[in-house]
Amino acid sequence: MSELKVYNSLSRTKEVFTPITPGHVGLYVCGPTVSGESHLGHARPYITFDVINRYLAHLGYKVRYVRNITDAGHFEEEGRAAEDKISKKAILEKLEPMELVQKYTNLFHWAMQQFNTLPPSIEPTATGHIVEQIGMIETIIKAGYGYEVNGSVYFDVKKYAASHDYGKLSGRVIDDLLETTRDLEGQEEKRDRADFALWKNAAPEHIMRWQSPWGIGFPGWHIECSAMATKYLGSQFDIHGGGMDLLFPHHESEIAQSTICNHQAPVRYWIHNNMITINGRKMGKSYNNQIQLTEMFSGSHPILEKAYHPMVIRFFILQTHYRSTLDFSNEALQASEKGLKRLWEAYENLGKLRAISDELRAEAGDPELDARVSKLISEFDEFMNDDFSTARVLANMFELAPVINSMKDKIIPVTSLSKETFALLQKQFSVYIEDILGLKSISAEDNEKLQGIMQLLIDIRKEAKGKKDFVTSDKIRNQLAQLGITL
RNA sequence: AGCCGUGUGGCCGAGAGGAUAGGUACAGGUCUGCAACACCUUUUACGUCGGUUCGAAUCCGACCGCGGCGUCCA
Image (tube, rainbow, N blue to C red; front, side, top):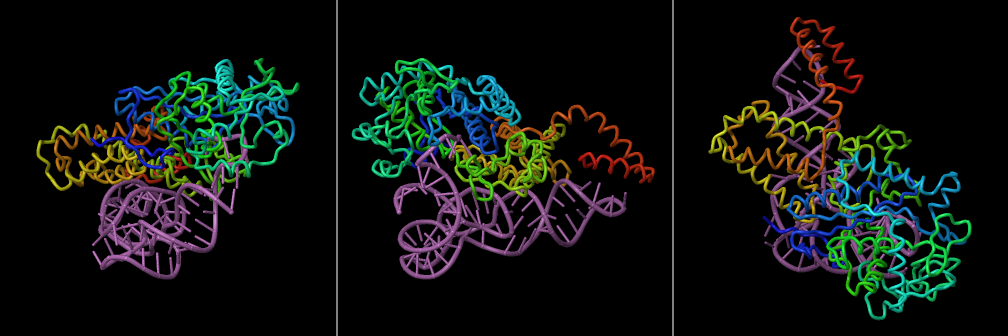
């Protein structure tokens, strides 16, 4: 089998993946900020890294997958005193901050379950790791790379850049940063405009606050991830993932902080997923174009023509390479919906063929077809090893679908394939579609409950048709059609 | 301004110096009481202009368009 290659944002090339500790992988992914509901764009990284997590496990690695919950919020500097995003909204909604955080955390977990993502091994919260963050900041100050001003602590980027490559990940040039950082109030505290906050002094009205050596305040955004990643994965770990929009300044700053504290680059492979766009534009707060996940599932958004099943969204995301932008449209989602339905039916048909698989023999009845099928199957691994190319795996599955369906309809005999190829087809199709891609039937739950009733209706209709009683048969068909069930 | 990235058929998207990607839609056919499903067949491609090459959608250059970062961001 070919080796796993991953695209490393650090080198901007595909590299062979070699874990630090043989047989184990440390994976950290920036989790959600639970100050609000997740939107469609948020689904992408969690589904992408779910597949990466699943595939690494499939390869036999023991993965420690850490995905944090950012519940302390980041400070906003809107020309006013710095405020914590979460506490700001909490006041408006007259809720206890942690109540708000819990509500959106629960909602996030629910959505992740709908998407059939596997839970991370550890899901640390930022608020639960204030001690570790303060510890790291103290180390940075001691090393001479952090300084305190009026109860806030900043990271000295210029000093760091003198001996380290600040901008290595993002391709940023330090001199440009000094020129272009936005002119904001509160900036005068910093020695340099490129510096970023490690700890922020909290104004009295700030609800989320903690005692620190520098007074009452709250942690900066970047230090959260550094502290939690170091605690659970060590000074250096294998993979750090997240959205491309976090590359700078978030990930660049994480590297700087961790490098000072732990004396080595924190991450071997940086993996970044691209954005979901809508009308060619990134989905996000600033454009006011986001569609919440709950709206996607229920169809309750003016842009949406209908509701989209979580599995359709998962499939839609997996049909594109994770490093390409993915443009949302109703047409594209509906194409995915039909595609997934077709693929899943082929998969179910494959299961049904088990009954007649006794007929199979060692030699293939149609060696040419047999060869084509085994090639398509063997490419599953090859494509996944090539930087997790789920889109190509799915394309191969679609090429196998007509073969499977034709065997099921007895247009071609099952014995066209050798016993070995058929077994491989069943096994690999199942492993990939369910275990690695994490797909499920769109209506699995309904099916279980309704299968019996459905079968009864189908039988009655068949009887009616047999008696040429088309009034009854059409009535059954049409009524079911109204419920969205096609016979 | 800069730094990254990107431009593929009606739509979504793989791929990548010589091969039919794939999905979906449209059209025709087989099947069917009519449909649907399934299966078969099939049309519309690689932003523009140059260059390298026997050959470029794929490499190089210029230009144009779009996006991301730079500011909360997945």
